[in-house]
Amino acid sequence: MIIRALLFVIAFLPLASSVEAGFLSNMRNIFVKHQHPVPSIDILVVNDQPSAVIEVNGKYQLYNPHTKKLISKRYIGKKKLMQTDSSGLKWGEGFPGIFQLTIIPDDPSVVITIDGTDYRGNVTVYDIGGAISIVNRIPIEEYLRATLPGKYGEPMPEETMAAIAIVARTDAFYLSHNPKNKFWAVDGAQVGYEGMKSLHPSSPMEMAINSTRHMVLSKTGAYEGKVTPFPAQWIDPQSHHQTGSNSRITVYEAEDIARTGGHAAQILSKAFPGSHIELIY
Image 1: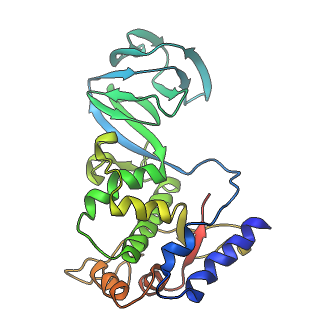
Image 2 (image 1 turned 45 degrees about the vertical axis):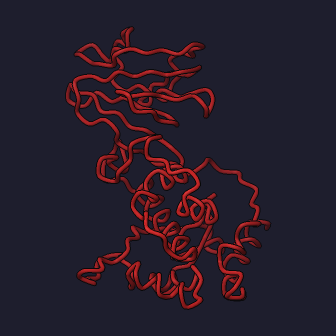
């Protein structure tokens, strides 16, 4: 009942809010008791390489994602070359018969370094056709913080950034549940993801991401018992060509709405008619 009541508030609060308060200001103090796993996304960070140097700077566990079984717990860090052959993966030691290996840090502060790039979250190594591919799993919120600020670096109204964050989260949540590849949801090289190097602490876009935490667009909601995100993208400002789930307006038009007093919910209602805001966590 608490979550349903809060979702009811989210649905109607922006419409009742004053222009001065804005959508973000109303959402900052909303609290939800979470009972589900944090929504995460799988990102390809190494693709089809003969080997990679992997270092873990703290305690971690090794799992076989194919069998979903624990291989071992390690209490000190490790830095070794990861490679593969016909017998299985090798990371200093051999793992006979194992061609998929997940490294799970015991603590969020533990960093995994792959060929000199630092990552947080879990890392899974795959032998695909005799070559190494590596996937980093991180919470969707962290993914947005690592990819959105670099894409939208120019100053823009706060409410526009809120709308952009919600659309990007919707798309990421959809991709995490409907990956085109069975091993990963997005290619890090294509989305500009470079692990911890991608982070822009305290940027205006990061603040917008934090203020809209866990909010997505959905065609259904709490009353239907499920959230249905979709592949949400802003329309190309050059062509205005509309396909699939592209928005009805451009980011530039979203900025114009915000500058004339519109809040994020109003921007989104024009961009994606028939959808509304729901919480995914």
